[in-house]
Length: 233
Image (tube, rainbow, N blue to C red; front, side):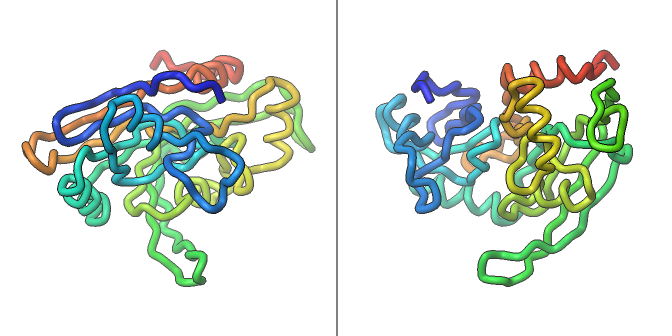
């Protein structure tokens, strides 16, 4: 990945938010040992000061990523996430036609085996059907959904959408291998179509209501285009 300046979408004396690109890890992890480029270090070097990630989003997910600029506000803002005081909204392109709206209430298992209550709400924004055969079907159907996770479990949105048989396009390992292969071979697209669109919460210091938004990537836009989504309405 070429190192370009991170897109800062919000900054004050206490917090800073970036529009994290797809494929960038938040910080160093034992799982991904093949890279030495992380959002944490890039932002620290870009600002010339220490930064503290108050939450995480998947490496494969783009969008709003929030940092604190000192330890005190890191603790305060982390508590907002823990206490579900932050409203998070995502966009996802998924296989098939989803219901107009719905709630997925399906417990997810931690690595330790413990089950955790997990709730995700979604709303369908647009649907498309294109003349591309796959398997036994002569056409392919897709939906653009707006997703609001009530809880914050690891890979929650990915697992929940796969659970209702509408996996996110280019998700591995929770997605559909046949779909992912189609997208890579036909359109040269293998970026997971999940974007952290916006975040709304009360500022831990000023108590102002912040509404931080991140534009979708060019690859997300391109995918919406070649799938012929009609987003005019």
